[in-house]
Amino acid sequence: MARRLRLAYIVNGFKRKATYKKRKNEMLKKLNELTILCGVDAAIIMYISFESGPVIWPSAGEVQQRITRFMNLPHVEQTQRMMSPESFVEERIQKLNTRLLKVKKDNREREMDALMHKIITGERTINSLRVIDQNDLDWVLTTNLVKIDNMAEEIMRHSSTIASSDFAPAQL
Image 1 (cartoon, rainbow, N blue to C red):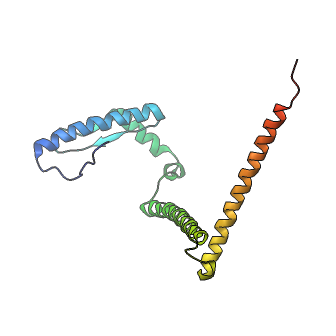
Image 2: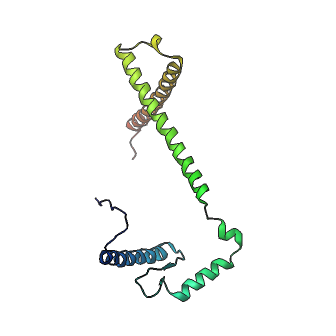
Image 3: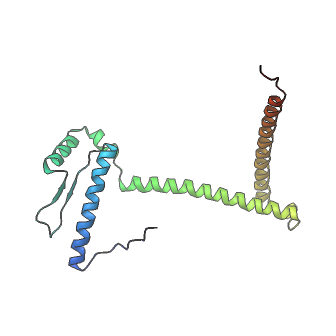
């Protein structure tokens, strides 16, 4: 299990340089793997005060070619995969809302299952339920009955295929 890294500015200059070199090499290696494995054109330019010049990967000439190729694309192609911070947040909110609805639905089903169990054991009565709880309980019961019917049909189909194969005449 990987331990969680605390991200904060490293005040000690020696440790900061050592961490930078280690992470830079790891990042360049991962970027190289990404370009090879996924066929992606990627480049990186990093500036830091304690290096003599910028770190450019793969090389200055190739980076310039990639930037030129990108700039020569029509504006539509340049921006088709771009995402503004607002659209990113909207998309993320939409995904989280979808997940939230699913979790709420699952929780309500569990709540209705627990309520059904209490009704069966006599701890609660149907008459004491709110109308919305009665409707949800009806939905859960109907859903469970459909599942039971489907399983029963599957068992019947399975048992009939086994029975018909048991009585089939022997092949000579």
